Image (cartoon, rainbow, N blue to C red; front, side, top):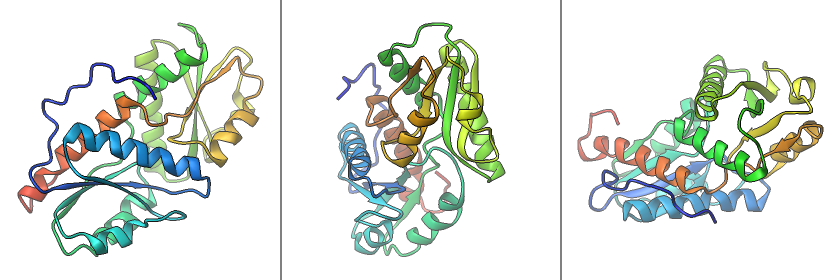
Length: 242
């Protein structure tokens, strides 16, 4: 696992008795679900708080069941990289089952810390400064999700200091197989291994470099901790938006 680099924990705290719960999408690919557990543990350690990973579907424990079981206040941080149906519908409905104060943080992405993680993965895979980059996301037809992906592209371009194009495996954006170039470094905008990560490698086989998925990187743990800390305000002070 990557060593932590320059993480600032001075302002990351949830308050006494507050639990961190993460909400990943869930997959039938067991190692992909393990990424959520590892990332949740890292973030909980940063916060000095109890932590638990949950899933929207396809893997136990389901978020709805975790909400039923809560006996203390909690902050839920979605391990989702953009907005969409889960953020607007599934997660709020699950949180309504809780019988204790619960706050929902924004989606994990887009965010500059994600871009920094992508750069770290590309450099580790052998990408060179100035190399053109193709960011590949799972994709969505939701206009708000597409706007989030465009912002993620812009964050990565700022961090990489070079040209970044955008493709997706589904939705209205171009398919990676249609736009990938032999000199590209491909950055999968995916949290964990699974069907989509395999598809990225298949469709981008002619690229010069295909980086690893984001994974349980310390920068992502820092981002989860920051999201949780901001949202925890509404747990301690009901009625205040986190």
